[in-house]
Length: 242
Image 1 (tube, rainbow, N blue to C red):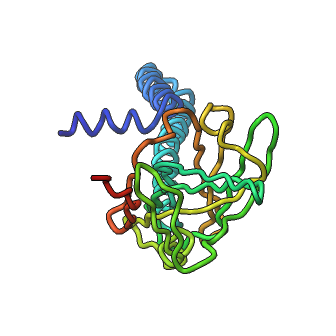
Image 2: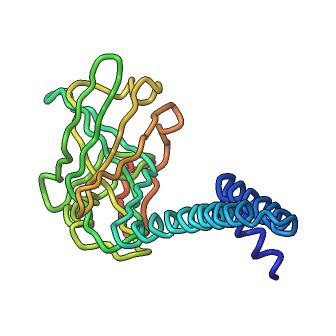
């Protein structure tokens, strides 16, 4: 047990701390030899230098541990939001020449309680580079375009920007959807992998939490995947002719 703690101490001290302590030990041994030989002044100076070097080594070990402690303490004292984007749905509206992006995401908080607000996306491709804010569904409920024969029902109060206005406690999460509108038809860029998007929000301290969503063909899914509290309506089927 003591040997393990001593090894952990050496690791914490780092190269500078260990070097200082080794030098201190060597000087202390030399001072004993000089004292035996009768060189009291020399031995006294060496003892002082050895004590100084040992102090430097001990401080180096303490400083490293203290820095790690302060870093962990800061993470717990401040919000520590993490955003994970699960999937994307797109819809191009020719009449408005707008592509609506519907992201499904989860926000996890590993720090102090915080809301998440100011949701934005930075859309980057060879033809455009712009940052825009989120949009809310125009009605309390809105049906998305059919995916795999089902239509996702978007509820305004269940969107991620609305859910995250309630403080997220430490160790808790919020999930939902967030909408953005990008000018032009961007679906080919998105599903060919020619675009990348930074989705983010802000916590109560003003720190930005964002994640990169790199698009590609794999994100064009043939079936609709829902969160447990989401719902979808089935598309009506044509009656079978006798």
